[in-house]
Length: 74
Image (cartoon, rainbow, N blue to C red):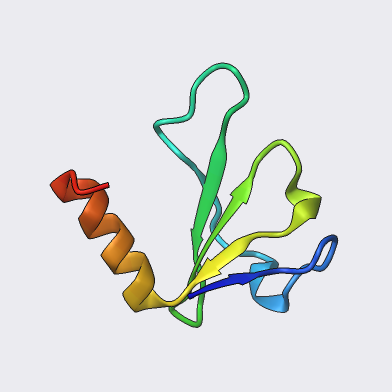
């Protein structure tokens, strides 16, 4: 269940969100940012072109993703 924010559309929830650059980002500008949103959803966006919007995940979907990364099943 992925929601895609429309191009150049900034959801009100994104304004002032605590965006954090991934610690796994390399020096080749292949970076992403994550924000835990006030609604409990999680957003991920490309740092090179933030105007593209963000992928937004429900809390349960985000947790399933994090668990899969941590246990190596992804």
